Amino acid sequence: MTLQMDPARTKTELSDRSFKQLIDGRLLEGASSQPVIDPATGEAFAVAPVANESQANEACLAAARAFAGWQKTTHGDRTNILEQIAVRIEERRLEIAQIITLENGKPIAEAEGDVDAAVTWLRYFNSLRLDPEVLREDDESRIEVHRTPLGVVLAIIPWNFPFFQTIYKLAPALLAGNTIVIKPAPTTPLNAMVVAEIVHDLVPAGVVNVVGDGGEIGPFLSAHPSIAKVSFTGSTAVGRKVMASGDTVKRVVLELGGNDAAVVLDDADIPAVAQRIFEKAFWNTGQVCINIKRIYVHSSQYDEFCTELARLAEKAKIGPGLNRDNEFGPLQNARQFQTAKNALGIAARDGKIIAGGNVIDRPGYFVELTVVRDIEETSPLVAEETFAPIRSVLKYDDIDEVIERANRTDYGLGNSVWGSDVERATTVARQLESGTVWVNTHSAVAPDVPFGGRKQSGLGVEFGIDGLLEYTDSSVIHIAKKAYSDN
Ligand code: NAD
Image (cartoon, rainbow, N blue to C red; front, side, top):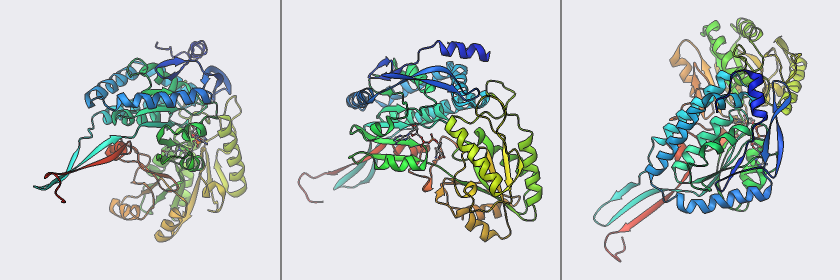
């Protein structure tokens, strides 16, 4: 079904539609249901199924049963199925993007970008192979390393790029021979139910399961004894709980929060750099783990940079995402909206607001893009992860001092350095403590480049061959060529 681009009609069609979970090969109603809120209005526009513990248990057990057969399928069997999933996603591109925009709030062009990225990542993983490696071979022995699947993967998804995150976990999990249980965030469930529709007749029963969450089944699922690995993307606080849950030695990959710094060197071209930093700081209305959240500018250029960033924030077009004129959508949910309102209060208390600063007087969860200057680093707005469109600009004089200040955080997801002398900027970049450090860009991710956090920002990586290997164990076959010799 391709929905029309008339927002009212799109909403009517979705409100009439029945979204289903996928458990053991069957598209199922929830044990209960919940309204899905359009953050651009604050009103419900659709209904999503919600699993109880019994359904969640069924999904885990079905995935465990299906693993026995799925792990024996060939690489070609799996790549054929994954390619068919890619084609079906492409066929439903606009429909999926509209659903993402309605439940998440982001502008439709960005939602389309999420769908395109999902297909790109899926096809990238589908191009990889996990062939055995011969580590050593001589007359006496041969030692092979095989990559074996783990079993059932639990994918716990946040609400900020929900469809993309679901697909970039599903593809490597299945390619490596695992089965999967997908748990979307409670406020963005519908895109995952579309994944259920897309895959249900392509994969054997139980290989992919999608369960709806009303906000309660996460701990049950992550402690379930059938789960071999949790691939979690979300906050550091919940990541710690996921890691500690259950009584088994399960694998975890944790992609957690970040408090990324951008260091603007004193040779930077301020208008050009301010434009790029603006885009990376406010992307997705400030709700990206790898948004720039702290901006350090040399004192000689501080005023110029602040003025330029404030000018860009003031002229941004903010409104409902289905209107293609809008560049920024609402906060994703009521809790996020409250977080943003609290952060605006802290900004007014601790710094000088030079752009925005207010809730927007219209229905939905909208706040102005806000720039704050002359703020102390001890303010929670700077010291903690601000997951809202409110960004702080800080002044520095000395390069060693700014490196130390940028690193003075428990987070270590991303950082960036900006300057005209690329070699000098790169030298600074090497001293910043994060999973990725960008030079003259930020938030740039790619399917073949491993992505992960240092310190409290995570454990393990996603993407690239390293990301695929996270969905496997290594199994060593050590062969003594002469029977019963002791080599
Ligand atoms: P969150 O941690 O509250 O929720 C993430 C997911 O975990 C949701 O599906 C939620 O339902 C589930 N969950 C909540 N409690 C759980 C529990 N006890 N057991 C199992 N699952 C549970 O995070 P959020 O508010 O959805 O997302 C915002 C946070 O995520 C930010 O900190 C952001 O930086 C981080 N994030 C990180 C990345 C990354 O790649 N590093 C990407 C996106 C978001």
